[in-house]
Length: 151
Image (cartoon, rainbow, N blue to C red; front, side, top):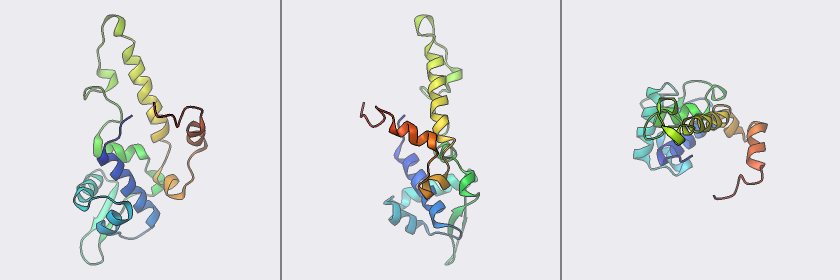
């Protein structure tokens, strides 16, 4: 799986909001804390707001905060808010693909890949990451023999 800078920054910004607790957090504070370019962050926060994950208030006492409890926002929700579907091939969802002949089983492979991605990203919440307490199944996957192998 390849995550864009936008998805990476969105996840880091959302976790920063989760870790900061209640109350508004200024965009420049998130930018500094997570080393995210401010202009890019502002667009990301707007995407997160449009998707209902983040709320905001203008003014001296304003800023951004999570619109729902951090435990109710999965990492998958954040990625979908800024990127769309978690897994696609040439911009199409796996179930929409058509392969012919000997390549026909690839559709099932891509559907399985999406299910695997969902098994992690839909079970880990912003609260889990902010607290440093990932689900045991995710920790097990990260500890598996070749998980850290670069290929």
